[in-house]
Image (cartoon, rainbow, N blue to C red; front, side):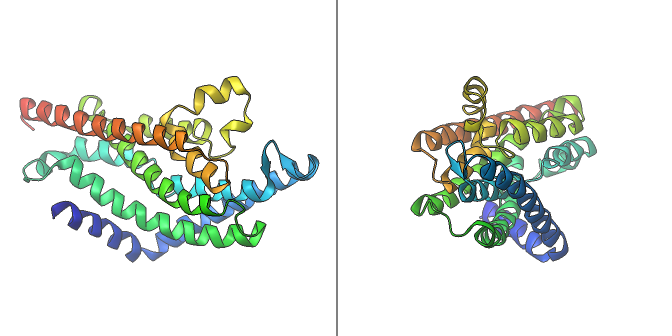
Length: 257
């Protein structure tokens, strides 16, 4: 019950902050427009396709990749570090519920509210730019895959943010995470358009499961093998987050909070 309450609290806070939400969605639409312009030029120059993708597929890929990264800002890692450094986490440890569990429930509620707004606005915008998705049922499946991507992003950020239990600062970590998502996650370009040697390194990594996998499904190029990999990383991510926080909390107790 505590986790459900935390989840709903996060969602309500996000929906109540309409100005921030509108800004985030608006920025996402600008990014989609900018990247779509680039891919349109590339598609025209290559006879209507870029690799295996049509222009329309690329627009829907971009939309879902953005809708899986925008809702969970990388600065969540820094926020976790600040809460650990300020002692806020130590106070939260006095409550009966899991600190990391409650925190992830709040962030999931907030991020899911943002994601639905991004998908609705982004989907309408993508339809306007490139027409309806050609992937059909795969686009519907992409919505579920996008939710798994959101959960994985939250889990990984909490696992990385927990480093602050030892380093007392997570500012550099969130910057690194953001760049890995942009480059290795496939936010800017579908990873299978990269040289094979590079793509074979990036696709199995968890960052690809956050952006490339849902984007691929939206474009009709997804596979259930990618989802299995995403689920495996999700288990690893949540397990690592809970393990890092458990050890970090014990360290605080030993040091006197």
